[in-house]
Image (cartoon, rainbow, N blue to C red; front, side, top):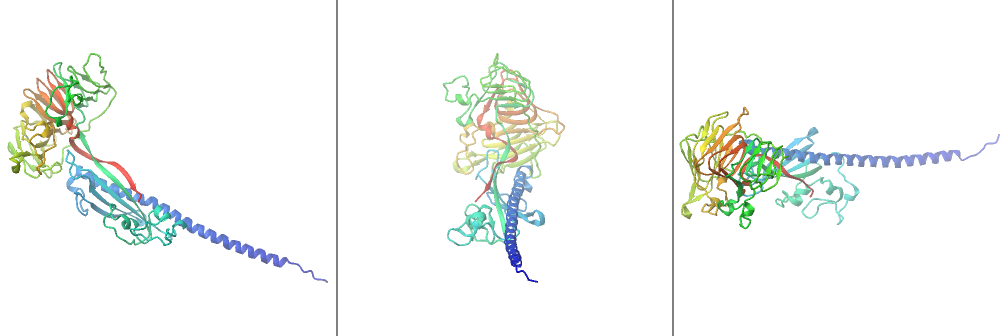
Amino acid sequence: MKLRRTNTGSAIICALCTIFILSLIGATVLLNCAARYNVATKQAKAWKEALYAADAGGDIAFAEVRKLVSNPAAAFSGWTSGVPAPGPSGNGPYTLGQANSLSTSVTVDRLQPTPNPNGVFCYRIRATGTAKLLGLPRTGLDSALTASGTHFAANSATRGNGDTLLRKIDFNYDHFKATYGDGDGNNLALQTVSKPQITRRIELIATPQTLNFTGSLEVSGAFSGPGSAGRIDSWDSKRGAYTFVANNPASPYYADSRNGDVSVGSSSFSEGGPIYGNVTTNGGNVTHSGTSISGTIDNNVPFTIPPLVRPDTSTFSTGSGSTLNLPSGTTPGAPAQYVYSSLSGGLTINGRTLGGLGLVPVETYVTIVVGSAGSKTGDIGPITIGAGVNAKIYFTGSMNVKASDLANNNVDGAVGVFNADGTPSIDYSRAGHLQFYGISPTDGSMQSIAIAPPGNLYASIYAPSGDISLTGNPDWYGAVVAHSFVGNGNTGFHYDKEITGFGIPIDYQVASYIEDIR
């Protein structure tokens, strides 16, 4: 029998070797892809979670800023420097997430050196969110080298490149602190990180929401304007005392005289005298025919006025007597604060003077809360404020007085009044120096606010539950927000445009949100 020789065995061996080599290549590629996939997915996950952590820090800080209005005594309790003045005040790190894999730290700075006319500030919130970076400490190949050929290491001269820069990855050093310090270039340091991490930073600007006087008369219910002998117009106290020029286009004050806007949150509107401004109602039938309205008319503007709650008086001093001499050192943000059971017998409020300038009056600030919660009795009698006194008076009951009983001894244009540092005052509005705030009754009832002759009144009032009547011949200079308004006879109402920025803070809002992408 003759044996046949073939190459079958060699072919099988070659095929097996080829399969083995291809398997090794495939396994290597698969392992490399799996490793890179795991790294990429974990980095993408940490990238998103770092922003969630930063947002959480922003929410924590914003909640503290809101306490400056709702509960000032508790604001920034336990933070590094208390209420930021100017700051920064910081807190953290707070840990969160699964197995505390996320953390956030926040700082808050006060933006402007002086408060707005309502005594409040704007704040900048900076929050850093950090996510632990699990898995292999690596990035894409485009991050392997810098232009100079060296591996990335954070310092003031290099920022890294590729994914390390894009995803804010820190393997050994905090690149942001090394390059930007606190964000403003202060305290630069080469700071190590305990574990690889991804960091993202956000910045919020918190601005106060205020109950503002944005027009001459704003009522949520019925409006019945002055009689045919009266009028509603405006002026700007920065330019001096009121002068009627609304019918004189040649006057240099003419442009400021036709902003006596009236806003009515119902369909109930009537007026006898001219209104030099715009008129809005909610379902009314106001037209220019047969009326004297200089501006635009819109009968489809619904709105509501939120109730005004009683301020927290736990830190207020108890007032007594008919004379109040204010202390020195008051500011819009830190006024003298008093609570009175009643002012039905009247109160005279005296301010401060500067001796170095010949005993000239200085701007002085006071907040007074009158009456107990639920009070229905009249608790506001004659009020007299001295030059430079800025009085905010909250009342719980009714106010029924003669216009002459509310004596405001300030002047428009702040002539002769100075700030505490000796500079001339720019608090121009006489009416803005005397502000009344009607606290809404908790049972939903209305307050009676009646202003009778004789005399004129320089004051502003915010009373969402107030039914206001102006009778006889008084002229009211200032602004009104109320439930309803009735003006008869030859009463007049004149809106001071300088009051637009006045009011009281009720909350804070986020005015801007950005991510710091450096």
